[in-house]
Length: 583
Image (cartoon, rainbow, N blue to C red; front, side, top):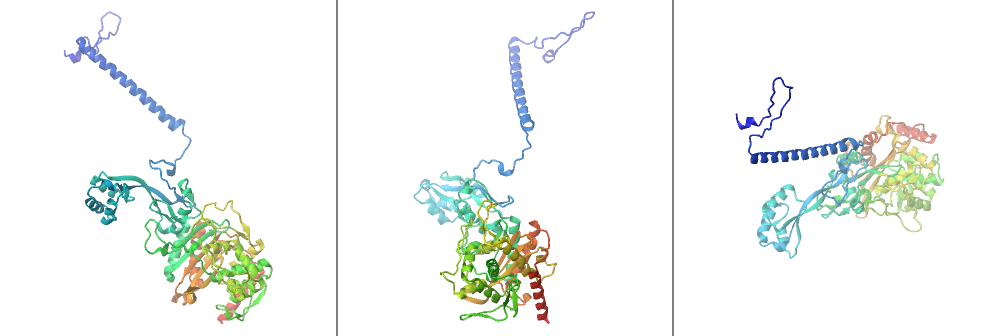
């Protein structure tokens, strides 16, 4: 019998004796030394098994505590997860939480030039693996009398690998971060950008430099609305061969900007090119004459001051002469017009006569109340100072020009903020790009609710008097006004070159949103009967924007409801005159 078999436990049973199991020592045939070693090993194995068992039950208990005892239905958003790299600049998000600007960890390559013994050879090898860094540029840094110079910021993974393969001990890698704009051009003029050291140099990045180092910034902008405005504006510019354009969408109840587009724009992820004009924000940094859109303010002031009533008639059959200047109507009606009809047919003559009733002092005070004499106190650093007539007394020609949108230049954001005050009950609020940014900000009453209500009906009539009920402008109860102003070149107005604008508010039964569209120098097209005024280009772009964003913003198709008598009579008179003219 082998030694192995002798180790087995054996049981002997004796006949006629109470059955009893007898354990036999499995090590009884081993010498004392071997027996001692085996017993020691057995003890150690038993100890290890005990320790492992205790650890297993500790881990099992911990898992039970975390998953059962300590569970509170928690969810962990990706933004709450910690990373090994503490990024210094926080995210910028839209009103729905979508990221518009973020920072990513990167690696920067630096060198200690004093340790470089063969700069020419090193420069040659570095420029070979860094294609966007020239040999001469690297050589200058390697031969500089300094202990630290950056070779390149934000290395790509491949560049980093290639650099490591070179094995130069005097090259160093430092952790950095790079600002990234996931939506490229879409928010460029609002977000602005940062420099090579990740410091804000334009837009909200500059205005909120300190705040972005501490917390995330949530804007009032809506990415979907912004994309819709940009796409429609770009399409309109292409169709009408315009040289530039802008679009703004604002909530008239709290002056929050939902979209702001200035074209042409740029990609903030790329370094600035030679054409810096694309970085100019037309919507806030540009000031322009807006033409007939200003007739809205002229009419509102006339009603508010009590010098005119909606039913008043003004003779627009003859031109108005002031000094050497003769004021005429574009496609004039050659008849007497009520106040709503002056707006409907955009009569310069009627507007000037209303302004004469008002007087320059009230006109100037009202323009100041609407913020047309000051920079807008908005969050963007790119803010324009309006240009307006100065002096203690305005000349008669100045009074007349301002009445129909000339002689005073404001930014598009100035304009839409003032239009919002006309329809929201008369309250002026400063535009904001921050969600709930005007929650605790002061507001001022510039019109009575009664005048605001009259303006709502008049603006609705301007858009709806000659369109079909199936037109999307009618479906969403849009009201507004168009305006066309001659461009200035070399200090002179150029006939035929226009800046066309459309401002629309919807729904006019209970105004919620205002839309402004402006095109620069749209061309005369055959399909538009060679007209290039706002009704043929800016207005269709505005219609497309409203049609697309209204359902998204929760605005259902609706009717304006019963109109005041002075509105229905103005519409009937305009329609009758149009039929008579066709005959």
